[in-house]
View (cartoon, rainbow, N blue to C red):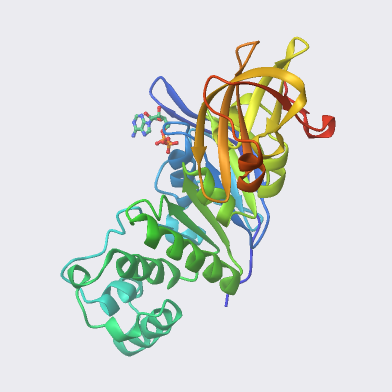
Length: 324
Ligand code: ADP
């Protein structure tokens, strides 16, 4: 089907009156990649996505898709498609007619659009439910229909606004595997907004972490996880300890911390059994909270309880300095 296209944000800015929702973003999305825009509520993710989609005007800067400035084009002209959190399916139309809807708007004849809708329904494994109404579907099935409906226009880029947030945790994990598979098969760029770091790590080739209207860090998921640049990213991505060190700050991953005879003095404040590992929360004499995620056999070889004094250790190479 479609191939990947390059998408570039150039000094992209969004203001709502006095509020600067997106401030001077410059970023290039690699063709055919799965990108997650990750950040806390209010950081500007949805505004960024809506501007790329063409559902929101750009205040400043531009959006360049496949070498063309699309900033002022309609969504149909620019070749993007958006899947909404609520799916926004038409309740009175069958699954097939929902999927075929945008082709009907374009004046495509009934046979052609039904044939095309059937192909898309096949792609998302929904052929057998083509004649149902949206209310007769489960959440996961509605989501597949919404995906098929967005993809029928053969978009250059698919934009997904918190696509999994309406699903229960079990279905969320299943559907995210399906999204990833679909993106690989289609080879187009997916840009997926989420505030869940586990979702971003599971899905993304590239994670773009936003905070306060700017991009705080962008890179391959493993790089962002292994080397958060700022304290914000370290805390938001999780699994890291932020420690005061030599007048600056550093991180060490919770799974790199061990309890040893030598090391930084601390007191255990909580112990949580997690199955494969045990989470031991401590407070250092310097006042930092440090989590040690220990393999369960290691923990039970020398169990600790809250109130006990311990020493925290890690390989020097695992300590990672943060930007001021
Ligand atoms: P996120 O998707 O990360 O939660 P948003 O892009 O929705 O963030 O919002 C970024 C900022 O812009 C927030 O401060 C929000 O209150 C504000 N904002 C978003 N949409 C509007 C709007 N239509 N009118 C005024 N302010 C808005």
